[in-house]
Length: 166
Image (cartoon, rainbow, N blue to C red; front, side, top):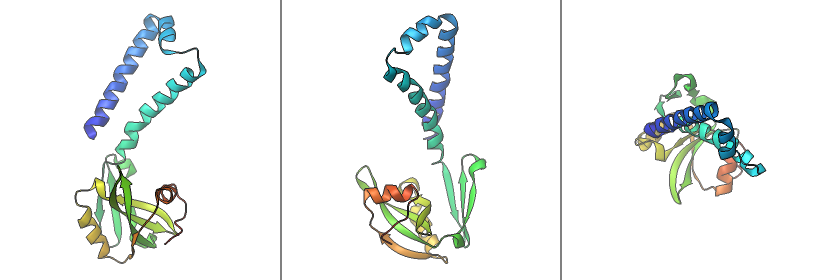
C-alpha cells in the first residue's frame, strides 16, 4: 500500500511538472487541450484533481499500529502528528460487527460511547486481529456481543449517527 501511495505522488509530481512546462511554452494549447468549453468539462477537471490529491492522504490513515494496554489503546499512525491514546474508560462498551467488504463479511470491533461509534478496529487490516480482540476482552470494558447491522445502518453509524438496535 505504501508503494501505491508513493507511485500516486510521483505521478502527481510528473503531471504537475508537465502541465507547468506546457503552460509556460504554449498556454493556448494547454487551454484548448485540457479545458473544455462545456461546463461539465470545466467542473470535472478540478474535482478530479482534488480527488486525486485526496486519495493518497486518505489511504495513509490505514497505516497504523494498535497496541492494547489494560487502561488504554495506543494508536500510532505513519505520521506521529496523528497518534492518539484512547482511554478504555471513555467508552461505554464495544460490539462486534460483520462489515461487508466486497460481499464478504469481515468482523470488526466498534467502540461505542453514547450509542455512537468512536473508534473502529477492522479485522481485514490486521493480521493479529484475533490477538487484539482477545486482549481487549481481558480488560474492564463491556462486550455487547455481535450486532447485525444492515448496510444503511452501518453507513449511518460510521457517519456519527446513533446505533438504534443495541
